[in-house]
Image 1: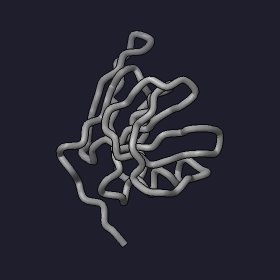
Image 2: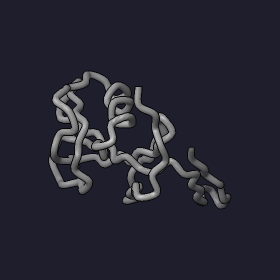
Image 3: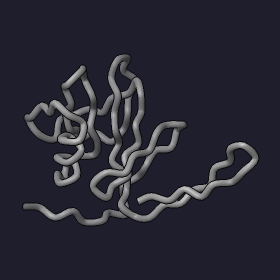
Length: 112
């Protein structure tokens, strides 16, 4: 088994996208984008399985949903535009905090 170690060089992209937390990493979801280069030769049927595999793979920088029920883990770091695909970019493990305003109120958001 591999253990997950914090890496200060990971970047989470914030481009109006959704940010998820899974396996102690932040994952930025980008709709209509993909990452290139495969980190392994497997195809995953579920997003959680692909995120789990990416979290323990030292060469993986994210996951791309290529089709319904087809996820691949990727080596590439830079997202490129691709209609019909979604990517989840692996971010850092450090605590991150943000503030958002909604309905004239300010909310504090923290992850992980």
